[in-house]
Length: 168
Image (cartoon, rainbow, N blue to C red; front, side, top):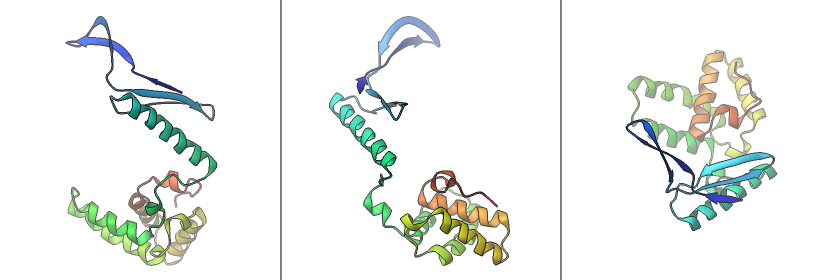
């Protein structure tokens, strides 16, 4: 358990001056499950950096124990809640063609999985959805795009949410 301010060689005009300077931002470093964790606390206050380290360690311990790490409000959302919020947020900053893809792909997901709570969205449930869509005549690419958009709506990568589910 260590809080520190890293030091670095000062540069002027792209060249090292030989002068060592301490950073203003605090960092923390510790070992957890034989892995070295070294991250910025993103603060200039030591007390906040200590709390950030404790929070990060607790987050890792909860994840290692299989306990939920996200807020309770995030855990009780349904697929429909996530996809609706994603559609609204996606309208800003994306081309019309991209928005059309979202409008075409998400209704299939919402129809089949709309009332499913996020904790119940297991790998088995995703595989079952993929099989059902395949039986309806949807192509592999289409199914992959639908599941990818679902993962984006949830806010995580497919490979993190369902690591053992292979693409069609």
